[in-house]
Image 1 (cartoon, rainbow, N blue to C red):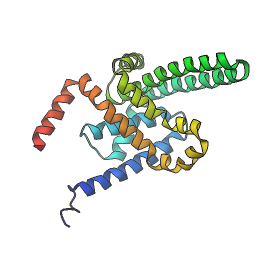
Image 2: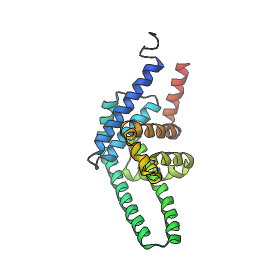
Image 3: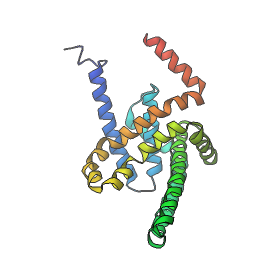
Image 4: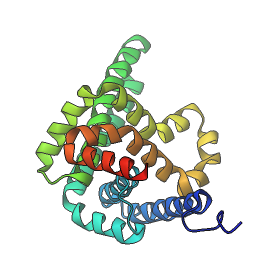
Length: 222
């Protein structure tokens, strides 16, 4: 019993991660309320999940606000770009729905879906890069575009996870509303954690030092 309740036991560590997920989810939701801070909030959350998957765990609250502060300008710039794209898509979908016939509408929706996939892929990669590396916003976006196609299967998984709430709302608004409490408590953390796991090999390929550190950690554990 003492072993099960020790600080190093899998059960205690699991419960600690569950608590961290809840705290991070709550922090992100609260920090997204001003809207302008959405990019910085998500980037800080991404940073913590990257640390977790790479074995660089830190006190989550302190690390979250440090990442929020350090990446605020760049993350906000990318978020404003994302907001413009969202507005562009909203206007386009309205115009297509009102003025296009069914045949042209389906073709245009398909074209917009492809562009949306690329745009969301670039944005997901850009936020992940901002959280991890120092560079200009232009270079982060450029590298995000390259990574979108260089790691296309992983990009597809990352984009599907990012778009999951929207897809749920499109399929059934009732389903989305029924799961809203999950999204507000654990959903964001779970999605970003899964994205970090998918993204981990990319980070290891981008930085050989990180891959070496991973191998050293594995050898030490053995």
